Length: 68
Image 1 (cartoon, rainbow, N blue to C red):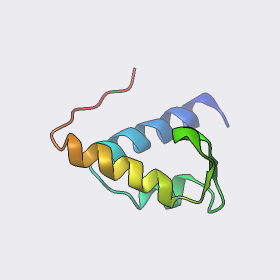
Image 2 (tube, rainbow, N blue to C red; image 1 turned 60 degrees about the horizontal axis):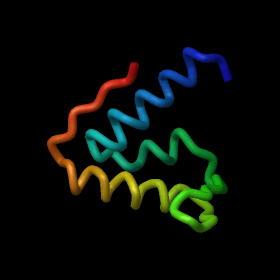
Image 3 (cartoon, rainbow, N blue to C red; image 1 turned 135 degrees about the vertical axis):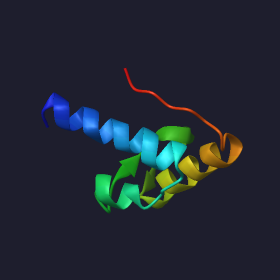
Image 4 (spheres, rainbow, N blue to C red; image 1 turned 45 degrees about the vertical axis):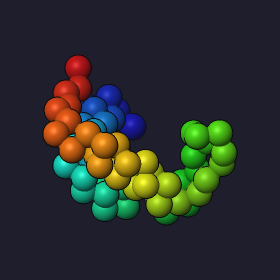
């Protein structure tokens, strides 16, 4: 993936999912069988990403984001 595409993906992740709470964005950005090793355990699928993003958005509902 080229850098501009990666930047667009990161911007959508940060702004749409984290800031705006639009969790369905993970279904667009990630493969259905995505694997994550964050949080000390291995998880599969987009649901863990949605849960973490929802937690951040819920805790910081007025969050402002920027990507440099």
